[in-house]
Structures are given as C-alpha cells and as structure tokens.
Amino acid sequence: MAVFALADLHLGLAVDKPMDIFGSIWSNHAERIRASWTQRVSAQDTVLIPGDISWAMSLQEALPDLAWIAALPGRKVLLRGNHDYWWASIGRVRSALVDGVFALQNDAFAVEQWAVCGSRGWLLPSHPRFSPEDEVVYHREVQRLRLSLEAADRIGLPKLVMMHYPPTDVSAGATGFTELLEEFSVEACVYGHLHGPAHRFAFEGLKNGVAYRLVSADYLGFEPLMLG
Image (cartoon, rainbow, N blue to C red):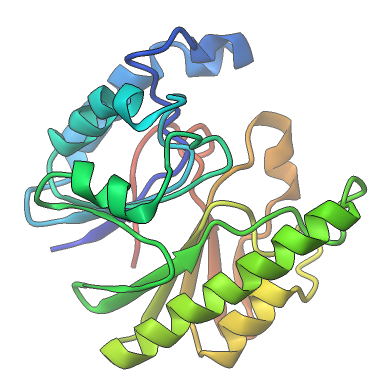
C-alpha cells in the first residue's frame, strides 16, 4: 500500500486543448500517464494529484476527466491548481466524485501512514511579477494551509503536504508556506506547477527537516512518483 504523487495532468477530454503546443514532450501525454500509472500503481495504493487536473472551464466539462482519473488504479486525492477553473465550491466538487476519489481543501485525510494536507499556494513574494493583488491571495493561501495543517494535527499521523505552487524557490528561502511546514513539523512536501525551462527554479531536497519534491508530470516523465 504505497503513496504516489503526480501533478499537472492537464487533461482535456471535453475541451480542445492539445498539450503538445507546449513542446513535443507533451505528445500523447494522457496515454503515457495511463500506461505508467497502470503499470506502477495497484488498487491498494493512493495517488496524490496536486493541481492542474483539467482544462475544463466548468464542473460539467470536467466530468469526463474526473471519470478518466477514477478509472485508474488506486485511491486519488485531488488538490486545486491555478488552471482548475472548473473547481467551484468544494461541496459541488465532492458531490461529483466517485468512491475512492477525494478533494482536499482546508482539511486533511489519513492516507496510509500519513496525514495528507495542503493548499494550492500562490506566487511567492520573491517573484519579479509579485503584485499587491498577489499579496492578498498569498496570505489567504497561507491561512488555508494553516487550517489544513491544524486538521492534520487532529489526525495525529506524520504530515505530508501537497501544494500546487512551489512553497519556496531554488534559493530555498523562507516563505509563509515553509515557515508553516516547519512550525507543524511536516516531514515531506510535494508540489507541481513548474514546466519545461521553469524546472530549474525548483528546490528539491531537505530544508529544516522538510523534504521537498517537484512532481510535475513532465518533470517526472509522466510517471507517478512513489514517496518513501
């Protein structure tokens, strides 16, 4: 019973959004995900999907993508990404999910040996395009992460955080997100969002007791990563 992670599926079964416009690495990416997922993940395993799940603009449009995910082996825990415009209220999202597929927002789930929690995150203050509008969203996402970590505390298992945006950059500098991960003694954090040339801005490794991993689909070669 293993736990895997794979972010940025960028599915589009109901919309015309071919991913190979972002480079040949994305050619036939959905089938490549299906093939590697089916080979690596069993029905008893769990896969964390930290955002950018579907290009759909509405929940109705997202239903074929959610069904595609549900048909793959294992349980799934979904988190909203910046392109998940279909993700409206958490109640509506959860009502559309089948057994074995869960949506994470301001709460936490017991998954094997972990209390899985997290938030979408946002652009970091160190980013050159960070604006006053971004600051408002950034602080809101920090608070949402705190709520989720508090929920994980009540579960009482070691904490595994999933985020969409990176919680820090390649410099591994402190942010509101990293400070919370350290305050709550989080063991590991997986995140996505970075693609292609932006992979170079990722921080991976151990920082103040927290292990960070980038799990964007193209970074992982479209194969779910088993978390140790």
